[in-house]
Image (cartoon, rainbow, N blue to C red; front, side, top):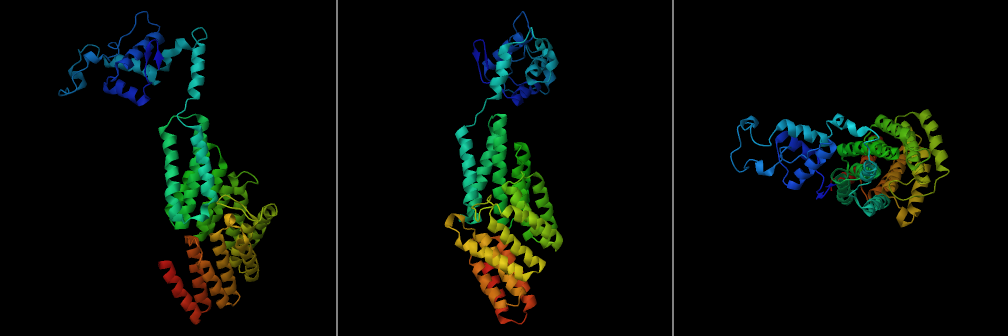
Length: 425
């Protein structure tokens, strides 16, 4: 704030409220002088106001070290301490008495400097553009290298960056375009945190971060962030044996996902396998057509949380055929997916997806009367470098299936004990 010869930092609205309602006096006498000068100009007064006229004369302030009066009315006659005058003056700058500024709302009283001030304030920011760029790069790096570290190691890094964005959103001045960019970064980080929570089996955290990502996407005007959140929610519901919730989440995400974007491709496959999990064979076949149409245009493999590739859709088919009871088709799809996953170069390896495909193959072997092959394949899956919650759940499902189909098989009983010990470790 620079008025005449007075140069001070503009006060915050809450501080003005304390001056108006609580009788506080600005610590810096230049603030009171600046306000008096401002009101003199705004009100077109011929006689200049003084800090005392506003009840802000430091020399008239009571000794704060002394015992406070019993009530504000105890010293009504103190010079310059008129609460009514104080409130009237301060509400002008606080924005609660705009009608008092009506004389300024005419062309003759307008000033080009006022318009320039509007423009200047629209671009004021405390953010470093390089910092925003670095945030975007960090999110890309977290997503593309997601499978390289265990979820428990990823959580502190992602959580720290998410809170950093929160402090920038609510503790630093920024432009409207920067606010949208921050909301986009916040949403994507919450999607990553939701995936980590899914891998750790933290149900409440999954939903909390998905909800946050959806809200941030609305604030950012970037609906694909919300679509990615529903991709997580659908996967989590599916592995939690809530297929209807999985279908609802995938459908909700599909409704906002940009057409032919990565999220839309993933969600089309989610809808298909959710129908399969519900035992809706006709609906699955219909939805799978859409997913396979996308598949024809996709690269064979892709890296990271937000990639789409042809093999993922094949692996989803394997799960779907297991649930629909098509063991031969499940075995073929799972073997195809496993072969591709094993051949991928290091940056594109997906240990979680490989293990899930192996467990789908194990379930297919079980359904085809091949318990030994089922157990051997399951052991390969349990050697995964990322033994996340979805792998644990699918392995437990396999154990129940084997015990149900082959209750007298000693190898099945041994595998069950081995699995229990491994998951308890």
